Image (cartoon, rainbow, N blue to C red; front, side, top):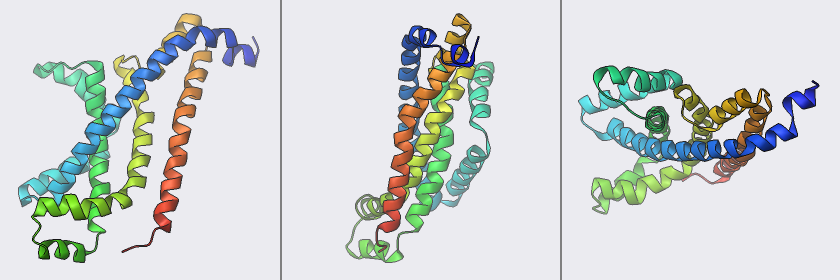
Length: 224
């Protein structure tokens, strides 16, 4: 068999396409869930690190350091295979969502911390002078300004998380890569893997371009 028949076999790709679409749906669902939960977790950990009592600040620092230094695959394996030994059994989807959310939360916390610390102290003082309570000041004054700073790196992290969803195939979750691997075994041809790679490219490439656009716009905006 030649190169085209082996890696770009149209008949094989057509037969595998329904499986790849099911995998794509699971991948998108997993990625969106991880981004939502990881984003909320990261913001909470960031605020804990900056403004909580010292014991909680140290706990937040430990969380950030551990999960930034630990590969997602290791976290996923520990959650899916180790927790059952202490009586906690999670599905493949839940385990993957939890692992991705924990790691993304650690990176999000650092990005948000940098964004908040980049806001001039005068903004905090102005909010206090207006009599705004701390949480109202954060919600109405600080976080909206920090958001403009952190959107580009947060978008970049979201792209990385979508790519890392492929690791869920390790715990037999039927994501895009797992479906492509199953189709390859079923049809004895690697074309489904090439098809999966092209699908990843089609839906991630616009996000990559979005990151570049946001970075350029962020550089062009005048600083307060």
